[in-house]
Image (cartoon, rainbow, N blue to C red; front, side, top):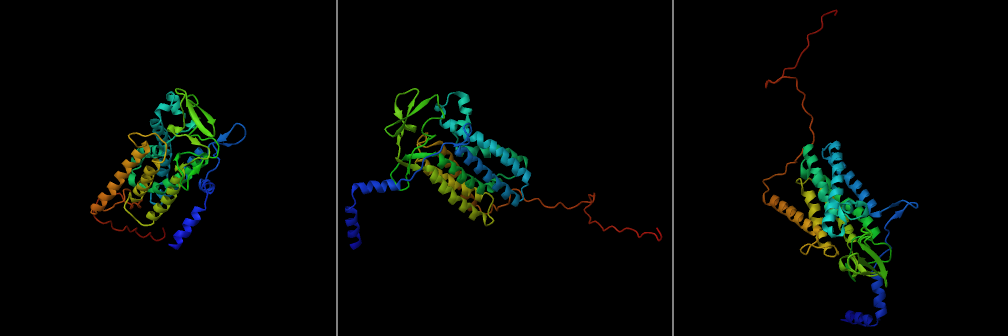
Length: 353
């Protein structure tokens, strides 16, 4: 009781100014950087750079794990290449489907360099285009995905660093302790620079607002107006932290021999559930109450959990690696007889030969 009274007395002495100062201290942030300028005519997007490094890191881990488990490097390198092509196509396709009304024709949809991709779409596209080559090299789907199970979260961690630099994926306004405060800089997801023909950005009374080409109504992304210094959910940060934890989890899972597919399903379930939760804090467009990424994540999470439960209830289906490491082929002597071969003996050389 004494402690409660002391705490109440201390709180009563805090004026409103102190409370505001405490709130401002709790809202962290930085000036976002949309481009790294190299000279006057060349610039690199931190977002694209993060994605590229993240993919290369994930691909290296996949090739390393595949080689360790007996998959030829030629096969894994081919899978990585075609997965990259599929990731680019899938990432853009999923984004276009979710933002179809924002584009001016096919040319605008194909302009990936203007920004606008989906991580979930990239993963789906990579798997879809790599699958035929898994069949070509006679590789098991779950075996390959287990090899990718460590590289995927590592690549996401590195890619999210680029998102944090450009201030991407800012969510709904909030006042909680880890709110992100916008402190200036170009917000690519808020100022419509990706679609210069559709809208114009203005800054009025510290608020970054948008005027569309078809309406004079002022609004931010999907109706949310963000003032400079306003605290919002930094969903890319949540994803970054969650994926770092996931890297540790899949490394722990990989320490012991497990049924083929367990490592991959561990990644899918953890990341999928995390994405479903964080997307509720985003301002992305929704279809029947959920974002496209939430619908996709929910489907694969249910499928993954269902598979693990089925395996648990049917332990008689013992795990057999879908592709065994290459074994030395015994030499043959050109006979089809089932009888054991007698050792050959050469006649002794004639004397004086």
